[in-house]
Structure formats: structure tokens, C-alpha cells
Amino acid sequence: MILREGTLPMADCIFCDIVSGKIPARKVFEDDDVVAFRDANPAAPIHILVVPRTHIPTLNDVPEGDPLVCHMADVARKIARDLGIAESGYRFFINVNREGGQVIFHLHAHVVAGYDVGTFFIHTGIAASILWRKLLGLFSRGEG
Image (cartoon, rainbow, N blue to C red; front, side, top):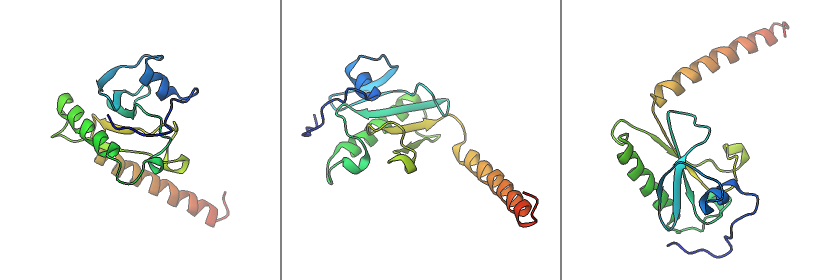
């Protein structure tokens, strides 16, 4: 078990409640350091969250050299192999703070798969670029 000081469960943290068993979750893995479960609001057909048992608000709060994030990556690889997505591909990422997309301030990593993520983001980017250019065109002509 990876030991840390000052990382007691937070009373208002949903992930602390899931880790402690107060709130049920569809767990796919757990050990002494992390719990992994299916996201309740998945962004893809496969969306797993890998959550440390200790409450750490963000990646910025993990001490340099701490093995936790490496362990989270190891768990993500195991889950990907177990779910049969290791070879076809998946995303593994951590959002950090509000502007980085973090919503729940208990460190967690996402394992996301089940559709062609690369193609999805390329098509979304192209669509957003076209829309943005049209909006700029409207405003530059004084139509907006």
C-alpha cells in the first residue's frame, strides 16, 4: 500500500464515498491503493475511472516521485487487457483543475474506449473550425 500523510476521506467527496463503500459502484478492479469502476455518466461505451483510495485533490498534489500515478497507469493497462481493448486502443488521461476539465476534486484517471476516438476528435475539430469561421465571417460583415 502506498502511504501518504494528510489524506483522510473528505465528507463531501463522492469518490471517497464510493471507495469506502457508502455509495455503490460497478467496480472492475480494486487493490490496497486504488478502486476502478464504470463511470456513472460515460462519455463512451467503455469509460472506467481509476481512483486512489486516499483523497488527493489533483495531480498537482501528488508529491514528485510518488509511485501512485504509475500504479494507476499499470491498473489502466490491466483493465484494458481484461476488457479486450489493449490492442484496439483506448485513452488514458487525468484532467487537472477546472480549466483542465476536472469536475470532481479527488484525483482520478479515465480509461475510455469503444469508438474510434481519433476519428471522432478529427471530425469534431473540423466541424468546430468550420462553425467558428462562419461565425467570424458573420461578425466581420456586421451581421451578428
